[in-house]
Amino acid sequence: MDLDQFAALRTPEGSAALAAATELAGGDPLASAAALRSSGVPAGLAATALTQAELRRRAVGKFGSTAAGMFLTRAGLEQATRGPVAARRARRLRDAGVRTLADLGCGLGADALAAARAGIRVYGVEADPVTAALAAANAEAAGLADLFTVECGDATAFDVSGVDGVFCDPARRRAGTGRRIFDPNAYSPPWDFVTGLAERVPYTVVKVAPGLDHALIPAGAEAEWVGVDGDLVEAALWCGRLAEVPRRATLLRGDDVRQLTGTGDREAPVGPVRRFLYDPDPAVVRAHLVAELATELDATLADPDIAYLYADEARPTPFARCLEITDVLPFSLKRLRALLRERGVGRVEILKRGSALEPEKLRRDLRLAGGAGASLVLTRVAGAPTVLIGRPAPA
Image (tube, rainbow, N blue to C red; front, side, top):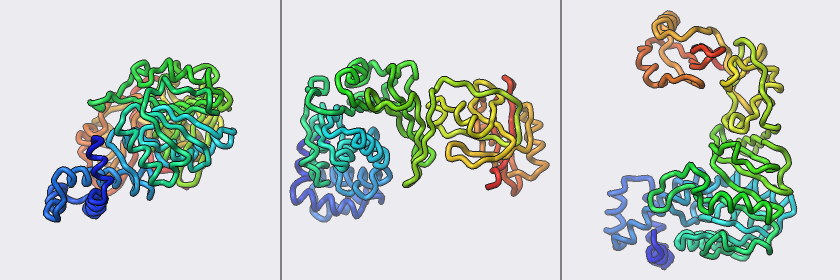
């Protein structure tokens, strides 16, 4: 979308086209476009309205019902923070005493809107003119234009001396191509500017990719990995006065919030495969908190480099899935196939860590038949390729 297309959407005719497109969203795109054009909507406006309606439909998973009134771009929606994550971050900032916040690189405004809803005055800065215009429109649509204002400009030039806190979500995709940027030094704003914010503003939060190298975490910062309904969605660096612990894994499931904290540098003990296997949540693994979880579960690793935990008892935990192990085999396709056929296993889920095997190829090679199900875990035990056969642990 460009500024002219956005302006067209904001006219009465554009609003009517968008309302009609919303009714058609999710259907056949060619039929939907034809239906809009036949009702008198110009082809260009019809295409813009249908694109916007489809983006809003997809955004419900991130923003809930508020997506219906937002203006979006594909790239902006992809990088935007999920509503529950942004709301929790905003509450933490508010509770820490932040009353004014600079959102440097505010994108479509997801985080800024959450902060404004928490009562924080937000000054957004966005380099892309279209995205800045959409963010301002989103603030207006949410009734928060008095708490969230946007300027189009260079985030590195914004004067942060007049705010309590800073939130920065540097762009991790290349403009024009949408390709992911894996080198933090190529982010926009650049990484040295982002990490330097903590030295200038006492309350600084930086949103980063979940795959961030721990070596890049600034000294004294709290690094948090966040999972939503089992999916690892983001990581954040809490700097200055906001840092409470070295590492944190936060899991959100509806209104339920669970957190595991620790140093991130402990090593879990190593022992044999035991009756129950725990598969830690990705947020726990990325936060390097497997050792802390092992302590809670009285569990051990079977290989020092593989993040599966083993214990004699099944204990309820929100931080890992638990399987009961029935068989431990050195990996052999022929032997595994024979055993599964003998037991009438026709359905398997395949988990893997530390294995080069491709699950779907293995599934085909097993040539399964039967009505029973099983879980297969492809891993290493004391360095040796191993397959574990299991089933969900009793509740």
